Length: 121
Image (tube, rainbow, N blue to C red; front, side, top):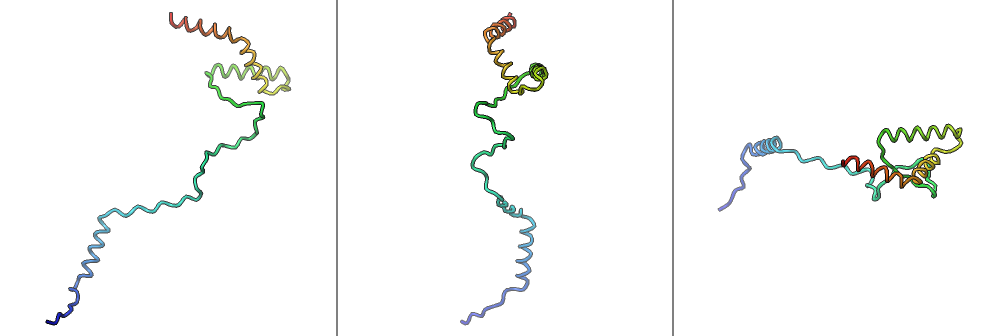
């Protein structure tokens, strides 16, 4: 028996096209590819460049004060700076004020303990 090769049925191409169109219409499109980063992420955290280099004999520290104390410290520094006619840098004035406070450490401890006792009573 000779098998005769038959052409595909009519309209099969249109059916395939319609099925593809419906599939595209009712499925979510694939997510777009993520863009490649322009530069690779740094391996070490980058620090903000400082405007001035800190001398080796100094250190930068941050202390949080209540607003009244911070304002009083600023005012004291301004008064001392003005009294010295601006000839003494502010960092030296703050250091002198702190050293004077360090000299009174035992009195400060006594005052703070008295405040704590008063709060407990």
